[in-house]
Image (cartoon, rainbow, N blue to C red):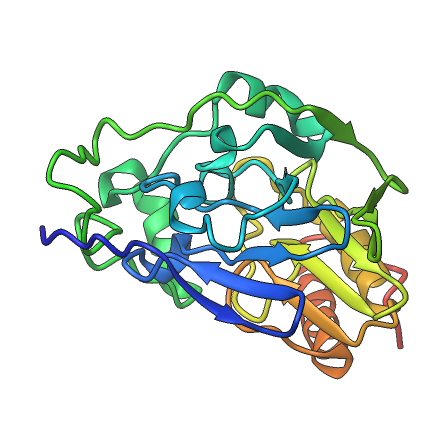
Length: 267
């Protein structure tokens, strides 16, 4: 496997927001890493796989006090959390951060046959033995790479606020994808960082930790949020109209499939 010293790419979205990603990672597990600049301190939302040092690669923009927020504790979002001193996660998933028990799944053999079949049906076919196409250094051992323990310094819940000085984000508890999935909502600008609660791609609802009844409530709640822009945990950002389309499509699909007792669907 080839060696790529430049492991991360990034794109400046506006004056305060930068998107960082790992280009040599399969789209299935390539999460969006968001850096938000504040007056008094910055915020980092999710940290990728931890294959290479995110802190070292981003020293030029990580130039002030920084808190790293995990939107949830799946391995593709918390791999680099151990590199940062301030670590934020929902209280219901704090233990996973502490003991590093989120399994790292970088190879096809890490998934069951049923999971691989479902991923293919959802448009995420796993066609290689390994889900990375390069390594940051010759010594990297894909089989030995694990999620490192990163105990939270702040276990948040619904309604808590993350204050950056000139920007203020409210924690929204958005279970469904995982028990402790959160979004970060800035009402003043209509900006939502949604993690994997919603993104513009196939949502994974049948994997360990997912709960469809919770997901229904989360989708109904998100549908009514007056967003201007949604920055998800995967795929491209989108606006309010697309958010409502995504929510309606999933709510309708779940109801028609009889997979949940939905009697509260928006009409």
